[in-house]
Length: 440
Ligand code: IFM
Image (tube, rainbow, N blue to C red; front, top):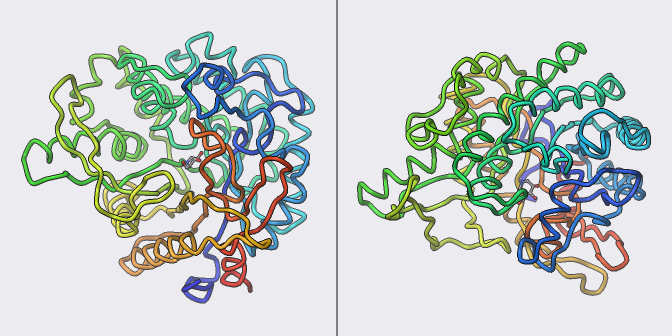
């Protein structure tokens, strides 16, 4: 790696991230059914109709996986808990085995000197709650706070940092407007409600965690560097609309207690009545803010209903996901979030990484493209720091090759290769390079 710990202050945190449904194996340990199991069972939704029933069998192999995190030189492990593993129906009954699992996992991190960085919801909604309208139903804020309380009464005393939801844009827009993720809706009314209710649920979970005496609470949103595809005013306006929906909606609610005008223009007629009264609940103070960053998007105007835009293929090199590689976008978004929204709050890059079609050859995985990707993005973090942005940590996505949602197991984001036949883990060249860079 072109960087090392010496380039950062002593307390800068390096970590690696995963999520529950993508690695655990939801078929194990009495977890309830989730809307991802339902979504994957509809032909055409997921590549080869793959689901998270077995995934990486992290549920039984977690000790080996935590050893990998420790031996990689990381300070922190960002993981998520599955709501349906803790409460199979989403409300009411608790699955004791599920709570025991997270209890063991957190102790396992502490035993290895790793700071547990918890996300409460990384996309697998209990099916029973989807039956009640899921993120369209305002009551979800209360259900979510109850789940937070059940889980954190058990493990909250040992959690280093917690964030309620991963990437609310994906939970709301990608899943209810674009239909790419569970529950697979393409419905502006459902999307508008989900865009608001994810934030309401965030506020309720933060309130519940504060009531338990927890600190170091944050939020994690995904960002793209958005640019107009050409120099027309129509494309510039389309890019502003896309930017408002993906980049500004959440951060502006969380830190400025308002929604951006370019997004309200299409969504306000569909928001729940009285949404304005929720903004103080949503914008309660946080201790840090996490940004997930992968790519940039070029956008042009598209005739038709709001938001009237389309993404255009750009000329830059791409990852296995087809995403353009654009490290400058990371420094730009860090600066923008710092100046316009978080104003001095510590920022953490909570996800960054790339998928590549990695294969084992002679026992090794030579993922040099990932090494270059990580080097270039860490350099972007250093540039942002040099401009005064208080970036306090950087997490690689992901520890393991895993279930990449509607792409099934085809897209490999791990710094550790997983053979999905026998589940054998093989650290890739990027893992070894990181371990050398992060060695103390
Ligand atoms: O795999 C996902 C993760 O669940 C959320 N952030 C983006 C990753 C890559 O698509």
